[in-house]
Image (cartoon, rainbow, N blue to C red; front, side, top):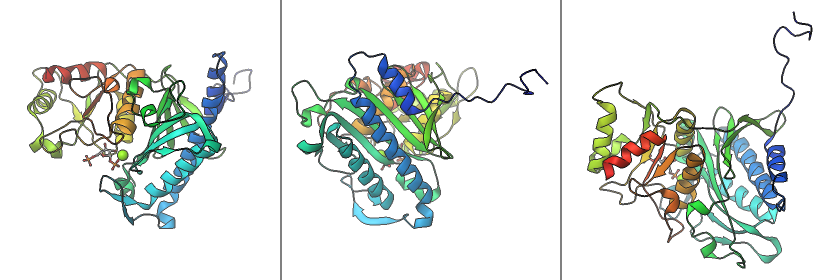
Length: 337
Ligand code: AHM
Ligand code: MG
């Protein structure tokens, strides 16, 4: 036994919570007002609420159709509606938001003057919710813009390229709740400690490997894939040298992207002969994930264009997505040339 009284290293007592981490980062910015910190507090509180409700869903019989459809005509589950309500209420109450765009609301939400702040949040409150019944990981995805100077919050404040995002992140509700976030200075991952109700920094400075061994596509759409995608997939499944890639596809973007961020490889939801722009939504799925992946040292492209450079024209528009390890994404881009 060592003279510290411990057989091994003493237990770590210095824990960093999301709130303390954001506060300490903020102190490095002399002009910071603290508004963003308050906004992030509202978002993390929402994620804790949703996490609790996702875990309770079976018990409370929340699973099932709510009897209404969202604007994409897909079935809305009760948990989507609940999560959306929690997110909107919490963001409005923070007093820091001007415009909200949610996957579940056809129109943008303009915050009333009494509660209005300078930030705009685009989000998918509960992505992958068709997986809830099967207990598969689902998540909340969000991006934060700041209102342009002299703007009180208009549609133009959210119809902006993803490169102008101030913050992007997601919370994955899996065996634990994992919040992964970037304020433009790298990517950090936090895990919810249910005992103390805090997100603890568990994955500081996430860097995506420059090449991976896993591809994540819905190959059920193969019949409709365009030639560059078909050829790219052939090249990684039947390589002329080296080992073929492994396939992993959950069909829940947050889970598929989370794995790609940590282990490397490529996630793709391309456009095909059936869906001209793919399936994923640009503002609240494509941009935040592209922002995170780039901040972790990876790439995100439509095949021919950097996702963060796209200028949006519609808040619910879709876009083809390939994202992940730099070398893997460059390979798929070569097939599109
Ligand atoms: P949703 O927003 O209706 O939940 O759909 C988005 C989800 C993503 O999480 C996932 O990447 C994709 O849809 C899976 O689509 P598919 O089932 O066509 O493979
Ligand atoms: Mg979604």
